[in-house]
Image (tube, rainbow, N blue to C red):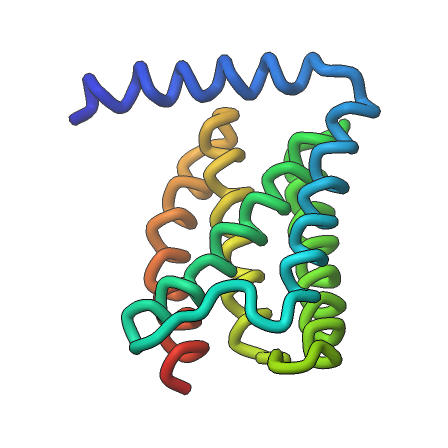
Length: 162
C-alpha cells in the first residue's frame, strides 16, 4: 500500500502545485463560483427527492464533501503560510455554512439544521487537513484525517437521524 500511496500523493501534490501557479484572480474565482453553486442549490425547494434513511444519509453526507471542497478551494486560493490559509479557509467556510443554512430556512420546503453546519465544518477541517498533508505539513495533518472521519460520520448520522 505504501508503494501505491507515494505516487498518488506525489501526483496530487504536483496537481496542487500547478493550481497554485494559476493567476490569483482565477484561483479566487473558483471558490466564489462554487459558493454560488451552493447558494443556488440551497434556494431550490426540492433539489433532489430522497426516500429512505440510506438516501437521506447520502444527501446529508454531501454537506461534508461540498463544504469540504469549498474550504479546499479557499485554501488553494490564498497566499502565505499554510496554517494561516487553512484557518482562514475553515473560518470562511463555517461562516458561509451558517449563512447558507439561514438562507435555506427561508426557502419553502427546506429547513435549517445545526447538524448540517457540523457536517460542513468537519468537511472543511478534513479537506484542509488533507491539503496540508499533501503539501507536506507533517504527521499532525495525517492524524487529523483519521480522527475527523468518524466525527464527520457522526455529524452526518445526527443530521439524518437526529
